[in-house]
Amino acid sequence: MTKIYDQHDAAFKRVSAFVILKDGKRFGSVAFKFPADGAGRLYAYVQLFGAPMVRGFASGGGYDKRTAAVSAAAEHLDFGALVPDFDKPTLAVARFAMMRDDGQDWADALRKAGFDVWQAV
Image (cartoon, rainbow, N blue to C red; front, side):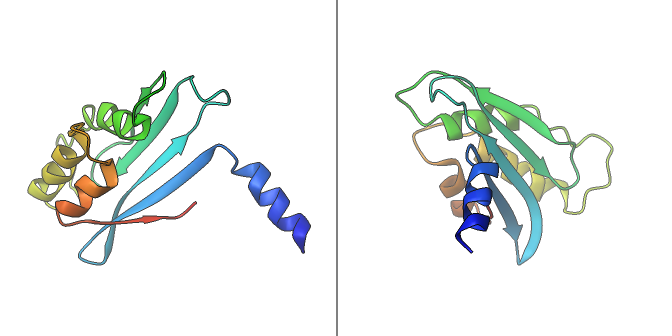
């Protein structure tokens, strides 16, 4: 049985993923791809339902790269003329919360804005 856990650990060694919920409904997701050396680019892939997926990155060290990468990605969110699964004000609140890079963890900012954030991987 141990082998399956080793395989899982190897497959997801530099990846983590989160699910965002609003009022108990799946609202979006955030996935991270971490650099092998720790100092390279950390990529954040952000998907809010009703908007195309976007990607941001952060490099270097000595700061919260996950929050910086999510913030960089959120700047590119465009709700355009899409018919969103959620109303545009709710999408805008999420975007604003994720764009904040003021020392607060990206997930905590979303939680304070009324969303649930669960780690999936």
